[in-house]
Image (cartoon, rainbow, N blue to C red):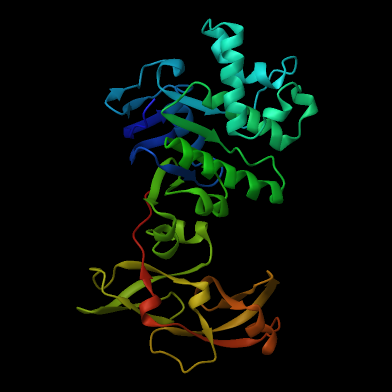
Length: 363
């Protein structure tokens, strides 16, 4: 099949009692896109994937694949294929017959379906294990078989529900490289559910951050990381400090806002008026130590924790009226002038590194 755009139009899923697992979600995923649905447990990402697949009914809204509304179609008629987190391989069948199973259900003769299955196994570099059963395969090998089984139906969209969660860290990196290679080679859209920010950043053309059943932001990985739209996205993606206060002065080029404990900061003009709440983000790696204070972009923090991450060192600090604050230092910079828990540290950042946030979608 040719790749097709997938579109969610006001999609809502409510369970008994009226609780909404997914709440009025609208999203366009262009044809041939690697899209990651990203968010914490319970945010609605897996429910959204299952509704696209047809394994979960929709309470309100529609799903369109290409020019076809697939909302009420059964899974097999949608042009999608699902790769489940558990892999769900048949233990009594060899690798080839596991991959060919859906073609058997369609009535294809044995020789033809096994030949097609071998093509899929070659695609995922598993042809040399074609006669083994699932119990004789590693977790990564079982995953490749499950992937080949999903692809044998020639879908327009491949749906993946946390496909890397059961793999060790080294294998995760290897398999995600394979997933990206396959997606580029096949040219179809992959929609991949994950709670791993690193996974989404490494794989996706489009990152969709979800929270409380709604979309907080949908953009490229670089856009999501550098310009998070909301405080939730900034905190969930990590490596951002969020300061929350109330506007005390508003000008054409800049505003000034104050935290509850009296600290005052500046931010770019955002249309906010005096008295309105405001939140800003500053990346951890843009915060500097001990430089000449910049008016409205400085504070003194007390070191609470230090974590060595190899190439960088993460330093967590506290300050009056600030819930959390951190900075990242290159390893060489940190160890040339080490900090210690309890140190009072002057911190500053450049005005151009301040990013004004929007209210959360779930606020």
